Length: 228
Image 1 (cartoon, rainbow, N blue to C red):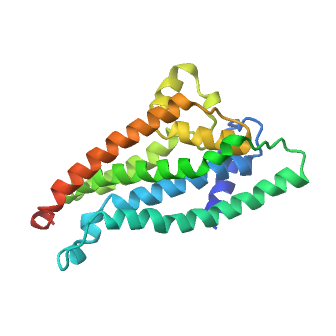
Image 2: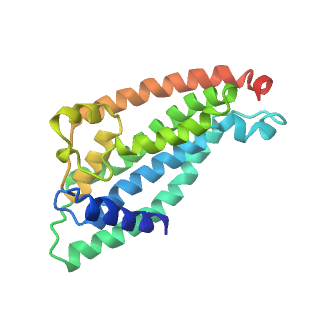
Image 3: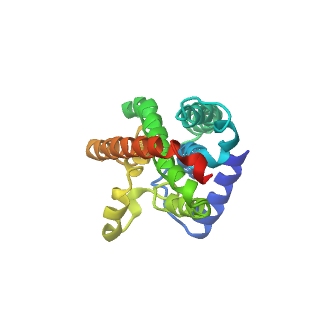
């Protein structure tokens, strides 16, 4: 229900009132494609951004590898994403079979599992870093949630990258999630850009942030009970 209602709101506000282009793709498909990926990213991020605070009672009673918690969040959120993927496929098949909409699926659609893994690792690595910070600065989690909402607008979800003014496009391309969203739309909708350079940049950013997140998280878990 949530992705459907969000899609309707996006169609009314961004497609209707603002008149933002969807590169010729039917609005429901375009918005649902972005919502599908973003929901999974945000769920994984939220599941790992306050690990110590949410699980202090459990961590204080028994020891187990703390990284199990964010990994479990990544896996459990896959169920939600698969349900939304089924909904997306129903709408996709409707437009492909029963309308004149030009919906083209390319070979790059096969990259979908790889893109999902990248999203999960991006979200988890950032969450590990912020989780370590929120242990000492508890109110920071409210700022993080607000920042996550703003970050969504810096990601090509409600608009294609092609409509961004040239002077701002470089800034949007610095977002490591941009190549992932563009590659997904390129494979499933026939719009967007499949940039191997962008995906390589995103993968390198992911590796660096994941290593940094694990190191910071490992250091913090030794003393977090003193601050929690």
